Image 1 (cartoon, helix red, strand yellow):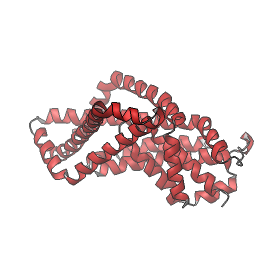
Image 2: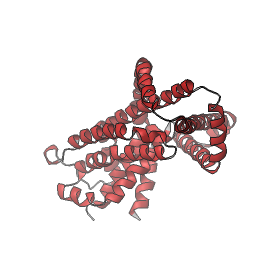
Image 3: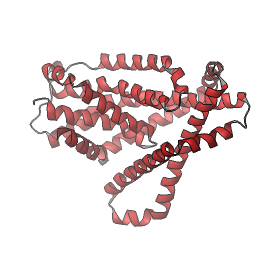
Image 4: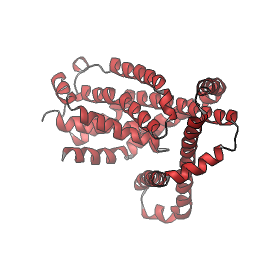
Length: 305
């Protein structure tokens, strides 16, 4: 029952205007920053990727290229479908909903469209792969190599954006968690600074380990479907411990923190579930906020039980 309550409360709180506003203020400037850095550093990063994938057999490169190119088409399909629905039905929808509900509806609609196209791709993967791979055979190896290298370079910069956004959420967590605590858990007490456990060393450790694992598992990014699982697991690793500690250190004693840490399945489930939203365009800005809000409600509902 508590798990269901955590999910429902977290969805509602993450879609609240206060959290969305902070997410936009944090996420949009970071996205612009990393886009600028990517443009400036694009050539050397692509060149480095090309040197690495030059060792990859053509058949594997073609399979991965088809998968990555298919992902690009999926991204475009999601955005185009969303744009068409908004263009055709925006006026009646806006009349039916107030501004806050309209924001919630837009995010949920985008998520539903993304899930729908994902389901279509899984059910028709053989056809999708065949058609995309056919397109790739029209290009010489050097062109395919450059194309895959560009996609992998984009993935590198996207991971840098995810890491910086996760750090930004950690730094800003008090601004919205304290408001949620006063509203939903008025009897809870915010611990004094000298009583709070430090989470910064853990966050720094996880960022370093995340970077090392990205390098070590880089060859696995050429294996279709498996590369998505590896990437999501690495995102989950990045936030699991640091997000849990950043929340519990505010309201839970050291004894309660150690007691709750034994529930590793729950901690991993929250991190993995939230990390899946990093795959969804636009909604990915809310992913770390959703994660930390879920940890918040779970800690508050279980720390004294």
